[in-house]
Length: 506
Image 1 (cartoon, rainbow, N blue to C red):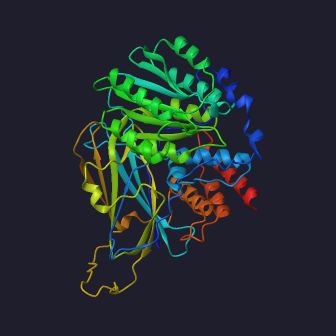
Image 2: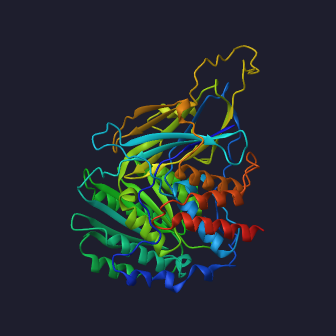
Image 3: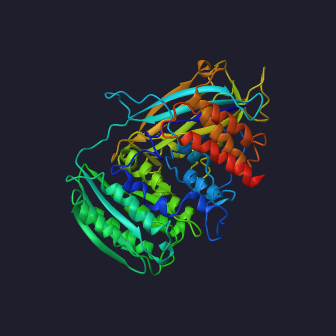
C-alpha cells in the first residue's frame, strides 16, 4: 500500500515565543489557570463535534479521482491538547488539522511566480503498514501579503452567560489585546458584542487608538442568553459599511459556539453565513472554553464563510494565531483552493484519503467555480494524506463486465491538480503536478517523518478501521527522533501529549 501526504507549511508559529510587552503577557490568563490544574476535569457531554465517517478504500479502476477542499484550520490540535491536559481521551479529532498545526520547511514560491504557492512531493514507506508507502505533497503559500491598504476588522465577541469562565471571556479579552497590538493607523476596528441582544461598542476606530480599544476589551462582562445569529448580521453589516476596497475586510468571531437564541444549528448558520460570503468579507473563528464547546458549529461557520478556525486554549496559542501567524490568519492569497488527485492504475490499485472527512468533494465540483472551498492565507499550507495499495505485477482484474481499464506503462504514482482563485476573482486557474517515481526515497526528511508520526497518532486516537496497525507509541518514538530545530518547542510538546494520551488510555 501507499500513503500520500499532501503537506504544506504553516507560517512560522509559536506557542511559547516572547510577547511584545515581556512579562505582562506571561502573567495573564495562564498564570490564573495553569494547564496542570485542568487535569481530571471531565469533558461535559454538552460538547458537540462533527464526527464524519472516514473514507474507506477506493478502487482506482472505478474511482481514479479523489477531490477535496483545502483546509488550513488548526482548532482540532489545540482542542486535543486541552482535552489531554484535562485527563480525558480526546473527541472531535481531525487528522488534517493535527498535521497542519506544525511548521515544515518547504520552499515558498518566488516573488515573481505565476501562482501564489508551490507544490513538493516525497514518497517513503508507511510506518504503520508493512509493504505500504507514504507520499507527501506540500502546497506552500507565498508569505507575501496581497494588499497594503489596511485592515477593516470587526471583533464579534460572545459575552453571553456561557462565557463566564476564566478560560473563556478573560482569555478572550487578553487574546484580542494581542491582536490590537498588531494594528496601526491604516486599520479600522469595530467591536460588536452579543448575548441576548447585540451591541456595537466601537465603529471604525483607527487601529492606533490602542488604549481605547483595550479599555473596551477589559470592560467586557458576561451574562445572558446567546443570540449569535443577530450578532453575525450586525458584524457583517459593519464590515460592509466600512469596506476597504482592495484591503482586508474580516470579521473575527470569538465564542464557545453555544448559540441558543434564533438560528443556532450548523445548518441554519451556514445559510446565514453563505449570504455574506460573496460580499468580500472573510471570517476567522476563534473557539474558547470547555464543557459546552460547540466545535461543529464553529467549524461550519468557518468552512462556509470564507474563513479559518482556530481553538484558543492558552494565551500562548492566542499569540501563535494572532501574532506569529497574523498574516496567514488575516490575508487570503489563494481563494477556494481545491485539490484533485488522479491515481495511476499502473502503480496503485486502491487508495483512501486520510482526514478531510467533511471536506471531500464530488469529482465534478473540482471545475465548478461556484462551489466554495477553503481559502489559504499568506504563509499558510495544506496537508493531507492518502493511503494507497500498490498495483501487483501483470494485468489487473478490475471485475468490470462491459469495459476494460488499460493501466498503461507509466511509473508515476499520481498527478496532483490544484485549482484556485485569486482573491476576489470569479474564475479559477488550474496547476498540474505529476508525482513520478523519483519522488520515492528510503531516507525521508525529518519533516516527513514528523508529519507521518502526527498522522499515525491521529489514526490511533480515532481508532481508524482501515489502519489497525497505527500505534501511538511508535508515532511518539518517530516524532521524538524528528523534532529537528523545533524553534518554539511545538514538536517536543507533541511528544509529551502522546505520553499523556498513553497514560490516560492505558
